[in-house]
Length: 54
Image (cartoon, rainbow, N blue to C red; front, side):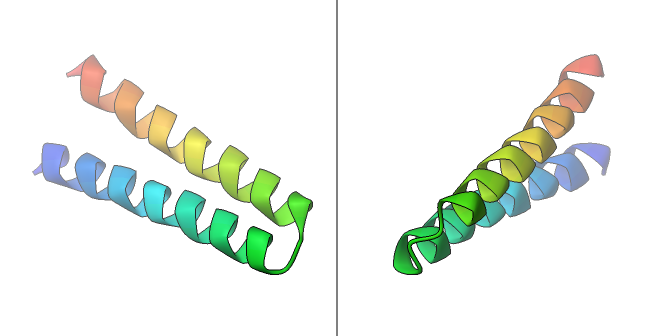
């Protein structure tokens, strides 16, 4: 169950990253792109660390 939850969190973080990049490009907003990159990558990295811990 923990595996499925962490993989789902990783998928959500990739959606955050991609949607932030698309919206940032559409609105010419580099700050939005950077925020999406930092937040999405951070969530993905933390979930990946927790998966490797088990």
